Image (cartoon, rainbow, N blue to C red):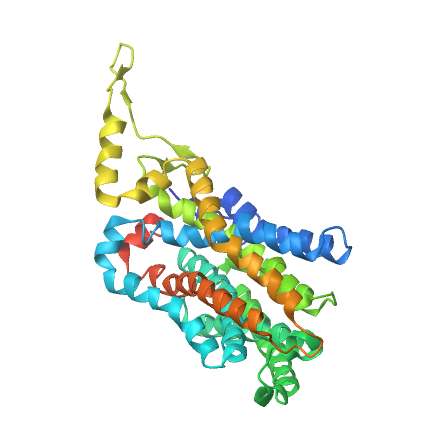
Length: 400
């Protein structure tokens, strides 16, 4: 069960709302505190403790690709999802063809530019998704707050991203020429918008406090973790920044997602997460008044068999954390192993003018094909976490 709202006894009743997704300890560690991983990676890189290629490759194989597998564990490997979402799942495989098709037509620059935009949007969308979960948990759903919260995220996350592109020559070189002249103007517009929206948003929180409306503390902590980190990472000078920030920004996103997936995927097992966030096995014993407990052998096994019949491979993947990690890394070797190799070769095959040779063109075909894994992950994620439209998701996340 989810921890109930807590009341700060030395303040007005219900002034602070403290309902969490899993519980306070787990949320603070994984959904909020894991932002420290991004700061750690940033420090290791700018202090030249960890070189670029090993940092990105290890992150991609050990952390990022397994989080993509997390999506697949609750979609393609879930027998029920394959039946209920057959069109969505099999139709999404067409993303593997999109990149090679655009590269073949000579639109590789446009493809990789759009891919980078979607990747960053995906990061922001997850922050928005966690914010919405906290809003739902804490009854923070008034129309005015919904609009302001959404605007704050749009401006506060997009300004530093556009400013980074405007200030970094490597990043600007990846932007189609027709769009480059408008980047600085867009950055100034987003900065002005961020300041205005932030002032209005803060005033709204003060108004809520004055009018005795509950203050959504988990939401504040999430925003306080995510927004400054994006600004610091995106506005800090560093070598090969367009490549480095992918790992630095995304590791926080990855750890959040792994914990949410593991929490959700407990529905595939005979275990349930306790309020402390630890697995709690299904009952195997029953106490008899005046006598010792009686053990019912095989109860858990029957439950597991039923779950396996219903969910298929998802049950086995989620049965042990070790299984989830092992399958995730195996998937990563298949996906990111070739991806990292082709990316490394492509970097070394660019001439001083940035023109592509024939081998680099072939590498771009391969890399654009492998982008299909990420695109499927982005697209499915936009569909499978809709708590209001899919009651099974709300039940798995214990949103009631």
